[in-house]
Image (cartoon, rainbow, N blue to C red; front, side, top):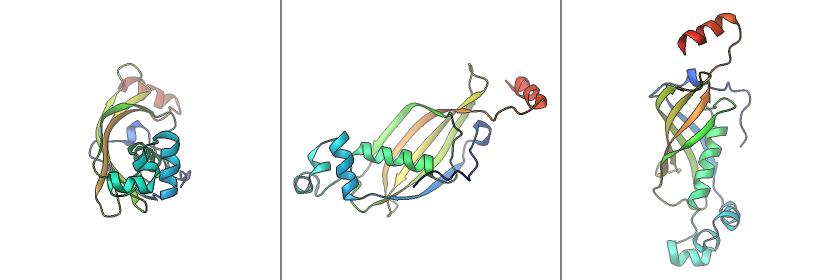
Length: 168
């Protein structure tokens, strides 16, 4: 899954509290889970199916793998394509609600909670969103709330420049 470059990007002005965007799905394979965990979270419940059976009833994805897949869905999904230059500011909350298992298909729902103009950067604004990652049974596997700095739409002529200055 790669970003669809034919979709328009969204600037700060395109976001409003209450908006909800959903993405397509990404399949989680046992091989991908083991590969990710071997490199980044080498615990037996993520890397060894036999050991995982005794620990968690079977292999489960690292929570960090789930978070990475959530990011992939955010960036490549339809309906929520932030403009280049969007920068994450951190997480207020990150929770894993249930394990992700081999064969699960994940999708993302993003709800925009708040927007505000940047007090120090007139060419940017801050958005706060709640990300809910669900499996194929519509069970919540992860939630997170985070904020990002998003560029404002570029000024294209003098009239736009005058408007941007009067709003700031």
